[in-house]
Length: 288
Length: 288
Image 1 (spheres, each protein chain N blue to C red):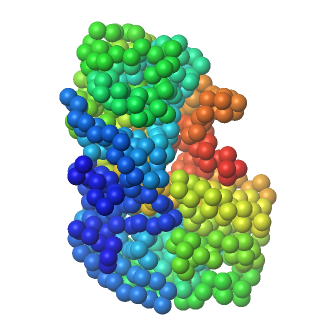
Image 2: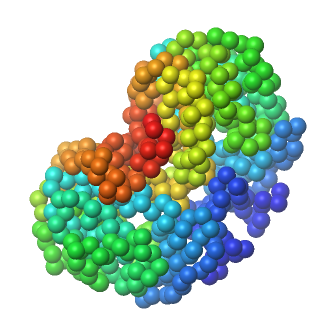
Image 3: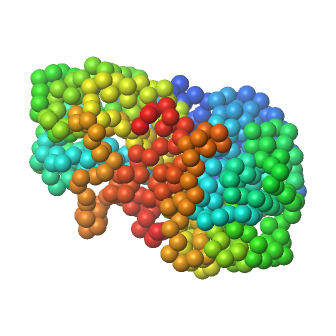
């Protein structure tokens, strides 16, 4: 763990040059190299437990709900009736935890390429891996590309919960990936993928939107505030097969009671719409 | 400069425990201790020039526009006709730069307690200190409290652009400060102050809102994304003398042409409204 020095884990990466975010570490709970990536679990001083893949913070107990709720409920609530959902990646279980909360969802398939991430989450990150115990979920250890090639016209919503576009996730931002997503969807289907931040990766966000627009009728970009991600926010590309879909107006609305009982700590109806509103510098480039 | 090690400036502070943001430094352009605070200007590798006061990043060339535009245009555009504006603090000139762009504003008074910050900004941060050259501006070197005690019923909008609630700015978050603000306002006046982040200082934000509510009829909290601030965002408390004021609906709207000619890189009409929408965990506590 050469990224831990003097009690701090530091996340340097060429994807966000000239800056570095650090977390104070109480204990390294786990460290292994899987066939796909380097996996670390930290017990931090003020952010609970943290999952690190290939040196990059994937989630901390302190703020993971913002990401998981938004990548799940933006596409789910924009859909008329999301009965069957595919999750690609998401090996920590957090997205499965959120998707299973949606009352309309009957069936969730999750395909994760790296079984070790699931095992590690089950052992050290129970607040996320509880998603794997949903009776709605069928969990498959395989490659998302392979799976979708064999499953056409099957899903209402597909969520790609990937790491950044280096390492095992590099192919999840390409035109051919969005084509596969399109073919795996039922009519009126919607996809949502992690898509980086406009503050340090604007050209990459633009590329991902362009790739998505080649296959989808409506494509938008939305953001969530996640303090432990680089630049303090993360974006999502959301694509609908339909043209002129109103992705920023939720078709399904949680009641105030549901917000409480389902423990929605971040997502709400107004925030759904607000998350699509971009500052001028990003709006101009992304044309959304 | 014991905060610079191995080419990185690191910002540790008890206001955001267990985490640390660092900027890669090319050169320390300036370092002095004024009567009020420690002042540093850095040339960074990827964020342009950065102003550091008492070890805390105040602004970087890369993202300062988000903060300056929002703290200025949220109150200005929520006001029917902001003819006369007071800026308390803001020694770098960035807020004066933005306030002077508003077509209705005729007269700006700025009171900054630390002349050294102004001098340093004029020398090293011309992209912000250009605000001081506005013909609308009268710049005064004095204490904001003292100034307002002698100027009652005078301003349409008062913006408090302070550092965090430690050091010279500690009194700018108290009940007595909001009382002074109230008395310095004309009827229908609006105030806006920097108010910390809900991710690491939720109790402090709550206190500031409570203090503001003792004197103002309508009080709201809004956020802006600023990557180089702790947790990647900053909040503003906005108070109107009027009860039931619609602070989240701008009364003044910039045309698309104005957005371009005035170089608004962040603020727009939709973002004004969206910035008041909070995630559930913050909404519950702040009751806005």
